[in-house]
Amino acid sequence: DAGVTQSPTHLIKTRGQQVTLRCSPKSGHDTVSWYQQALGQGPQFIFQYYEEEERQRGNFPDRFSGHQFPNYSSELNVNALLLGDSALYLCASSRQVQETQYFGPGTRLLVL
Amino acid sequence: AQTVTQSQPEMSVQEAETVTLSCTYDTSESDYYLFWYKQPPSRQMILVIRQEAYKQQNATENRFSVNFQKAAKSFSLKISDSQLGDAAMYFCAYRSLYSGAGSYQLTFGKGTKLSVIP
Image 1 (tube, each protein chain N blue to C red):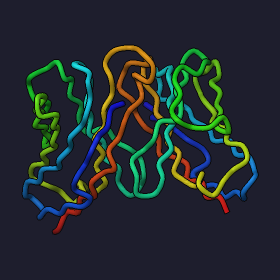
Image 2 (tube, rainbow over the protein chains, first blue to last red):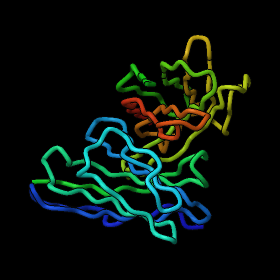
Image 3 (cartoon, rainbow over the protein chains, first blue to last red):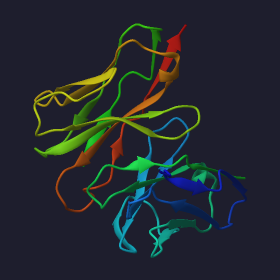
């Protein structure tokens, strides 16, 4: 049973660039949530997707956007990258919005 | 808004001994979920244990158990017979039970780094 997968594992970008991170949910899951984890901190909720729509959003600017595809996989897009966007980006999936979330291994983004 | 506090940035335990990690939270809700997640150096966040606030019985998963004190808003994790593989960051997290704005997001503490001494 495949767990949550994310790609790429590491990414280096420069300020002002745009980045796309990808997530495939665990088999049988239809909901994807994205979190940002800065160094030494707990994860912070970015947004959640269910039925290809953004259902909830945390306190993140509009530079952060996402998408969910019919196969439940999801993308996180960040535009106009800032140095402060350097972090581990975690994807979590669940069987519907109210169920327990299971995490992927994350994508480490470094913005120079 | 809910907040989660983990007051122990670092803890250490001797192999085969028992250690307790602390977590307190603040909420005005009466029903909610609490979680402990483990994040080893590999970075993957792994669910350790889940507690429903409406259940009085403390959750247990093998060597891991919790002490849930609802009135005190305390949710500690006890690890028995500690093993080298238990070394990791441990995060306490809160989630609302009912639907509503922001209800299904996890709110995390800052984590406790656990070291296991051979």
